[in-house]
Image 1: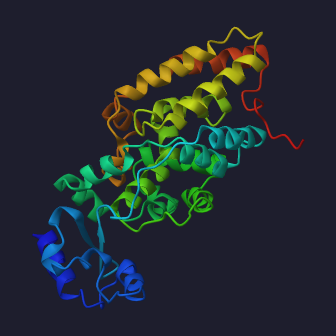
Image 2 (image 1 turned 180 degrees about the horizontal axis):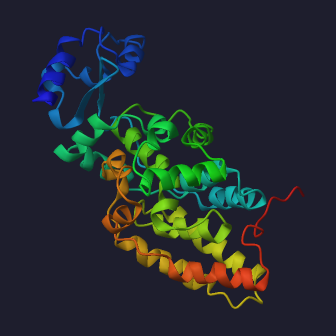
Length: 320
């Protein structure tokens, strides 16, 4: 019923009075008018397929966009560029934009189709309407800490504050990679959610922000976002850690394999109502995502401590 009402409002507002950045851009294009680019077919309003239309209310105004922009093209892979950006990343692991560049050049080719398929389901549309933008929610620690002690929200806030991280910081890092291929559609919304839950995964999985922990996150994420870039980073990074800690008895590669096993059982988090998770107990969230404790990784950390190895020192910033 809500969707029908919003769709009706969008049609009534299609003269350009609705809040619709895509429509406003289209109105200045050659041959454009105040209607969205979705309506440029000769069949007009009736030519917009219901399954390719997303409508929601944002701050009292109607926002409409296609599930997938007709001009989107399948992502292309470039192994050479991926290696170039990986080498820049290992000189300074804080350069998040270099990691994003690796993913850009070793993408999940089916991402657009998978995102569109999800957003054409009623469940996908419900989540789209309920969770328009996650960074504002994630960075409101005052509100998150109103949840009961021991909740996922408290664990998330503790982690982000301890590490000096913000969801807005991740947004800024990825903005550096925006280019002419940006499209304001449902697929972009899906991609942004994939970005926003990266730090959430640290809480779900129990992996730290040391180099091996990050490689384990990449291996785990392969089953969330099956981009070759995740395995590329995971394996090369873990092998470099193994090479630098060659005298250690820690099962470094075993930790990576464990991460892949644990990731296989987790449902796709981007397609879950993320905001609902934060009031739940941490153990309940981990159970919901079928994610056990990372026992092998924890053993690696224990052995590193016994051997006097700093797990954060690998691939540390290099000014050479």
